[in-house]
Length: 341
Image (cartoon, rainbow, N blue to C red; front, side, top):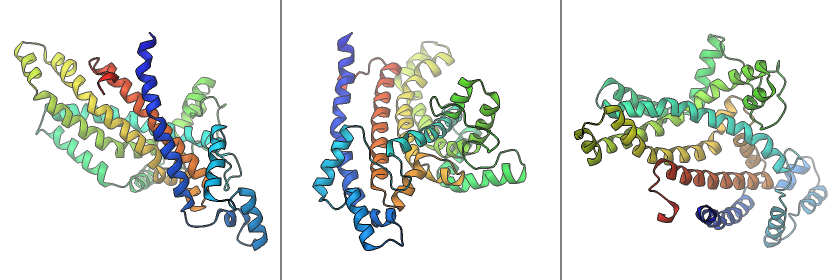
């Protein structure tokens, strides 16, 4: 049993240089940001003496190597620093905002997978049909339309014209109370609390931003599913299975789709990693208190600790997602193992 976990432990060890590189690069790049954090913290009306006092208090008067050593020592103690903008520890801000972004991103990916994978399979099976053309149109539209335009259009139609959607102002309308925090996911926390009213309100509030993001993520997943299925259906083993008289459903789902899922899973992991940190436009349009908007505000205010904490959190999530993808490979096709990589 111990040898079974050794490849996974080895993959985790291989990520250590990546995390170290991310820490170094994020530290150097944040120091290259325009603006002075001491001025931002002290205020525009502050005197030169008070700004210098703030700079000393923040440790910005020290040399870059000294600042880096202090930062690394704090990291080893689990301290990501204190945000200048919020005045709270960065770890607290990330723990508060990250579940909001994860809930939005995961919901959008689930919606897009429920549409994109069946659509890509049908487009490959019925190549040249109206379903294939519909798949191409949706893929083109998903790539071409900016997320902020799609979000504003959905708000205009479903909130302003039809009145079906609630006001696009955060995770819950003002008439609801936040559910007791367990996971940070409002849907899960409301369900665990047995509060159907809050669960429904959170679901309604989540619908439009999730659909907006799903229309964007649908495009690469559907395109990869269609391409992978076309490759699988033209393979020799599929022709052999059909010649052997196997049922079409068995050939399609048992052999073709299972082999086509490998590149789809890879694409899904890449899309998740990209969207989690790049959904700031959707968060801004719907006033969603996620990690993307937090990072942009930190960049504007030259909030070194917040930017570094965001980059480090994204790097760790990316490493975790890649590990999950590697594990899912072995579940989809047991012939694939860590030892072969």
